[in-house]
Length: 184
Image (cartoon, rainbow, N blue to C red; front, side, top):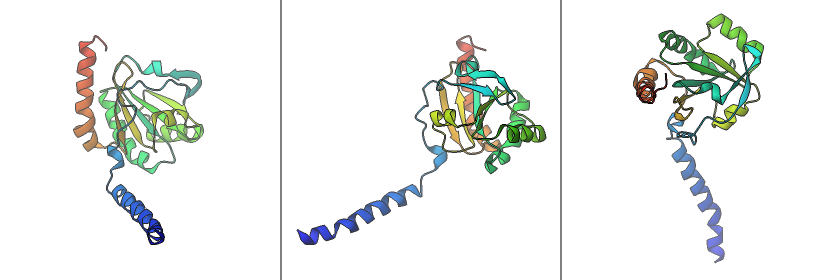
């Protein structure tokens, strides 16, 4: 029995090594969101550009929309930004920004310089909405149907390939359902 106890640390190390080795092959962009198929969490936050305007989860209902989590401290968000500007000009759907754990002045300055692709920007200074959405980091995006139900989560920067191959087909499908149900 004493010899068997001596092997316990080795077994634990091997188990931990196997667990970590498996993690090397996971793609965080493909992790399921626990909120897919569930309503957007209830929230009430200020609009980034106007602290007197309150945006709630109810604001996002009525149209298929994209929620995009971004911040000025996020290098991948800077990569994604020109694509969001392009998609916003196409006017395919409203894009709502969630300015995540950022400083208001820095965020406004960046939008003034680079352009603002967002229909509205939600100011999530303390990251509470991001936490409720299960955000791992910025950028992350959530495709939301006309009833305010999260239908898809994408972790990482959206570029032309992601838009064309993943998001746009889903957007068109959700918009067709919304049209059938009488939403705009």
